[in-house]
Amino acid sequence: MNARTALCIDDDPVVHDLIDFHLEGVVDRILHAEHPASGLSLASHEAPDVILLDVEMPYMDGFQVCRELKQMSVTRDIPVIFLTSDNATHHVARGLDLGGADYVIKPFVAIELQARVRAALRTRRMIELLRVHARVDALTGLKNRGALEEALARQAAGVARKGGGYAVVMLDVDHFKRVNDTYGHGIGDEVLRQLGAVLGASCRPADMATRYGGEEFALVLADTSQEAAIGVCERLLAAIRAIRVPVPGGEFGFTISAGLAMAGGEYPADDVLQRADEALYHAKELGRDRLVIWTLAPADDTGG
Image 1 (spheres, rainbow, N blue to C red):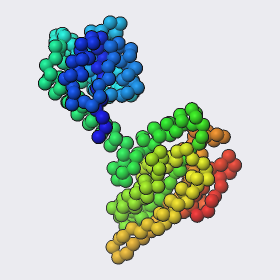
Image 2: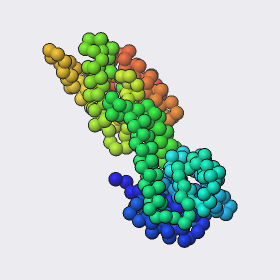
Image 3: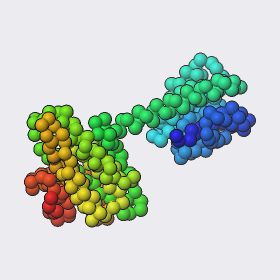
Image 4: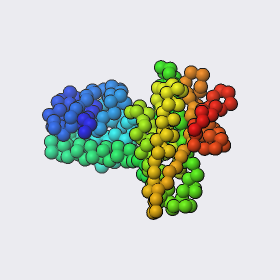
């Protein structure tokens, strides 16, 4: 279980001492900021699980800080609990309208503060679970297209920052419609599940296997050479040829076609997915069950 972290943003040092005392055992780590600017900086760098935010501070009040937090993608979903000595309805309502999750009236009642922080932590956990599930394909357990787009953006940023290269592989089940028509969609789903299991097992921690849509899949192979990426693909094609799917009266096998494109160095990152898809299309044209590599020259067929 990850450490639960709280950030307290308040200009009163006594409040920080009380937060430390009352939240011992409720959270694992407490970060402190006595100025709104330093609080915003800590929040964006540390992404705590809950933020305790004073309303009345100099230079920038808690409402302004909350507005800033909700505009940054890294802090947008962090629950904010306002700390206020004013329990006027309009005051509380304003904080909630700005995206605050809750409020606590000063001076604190320990049991109330603890309960509200625990509730905020549960909210944070649910948000994280929803985010994970929103990026996972339910059938195969692989990441989905949205996660693929995020991974490609991260890889492109990494290459721009430190150089190197990465590979993108588009894969498609050969004659998948024939499988569904012959054996039914339940068996078609089993083909996709087995393919997903092989793809997931082929990935290193830094790589990503995704279901792109339908019977199409995509791999992002991080920090790799074209030669190494070809080796991964050839092993994948061989492993998939060996799969046998049980059906009434016997079993059957299936194959995939694959297109590989590199990004980094002489190969741009902005169209790498399209280039991998072009190579996949060429693999289909050449007879399927093979890998085609996109190059600056006409696509090369490695055979299959």
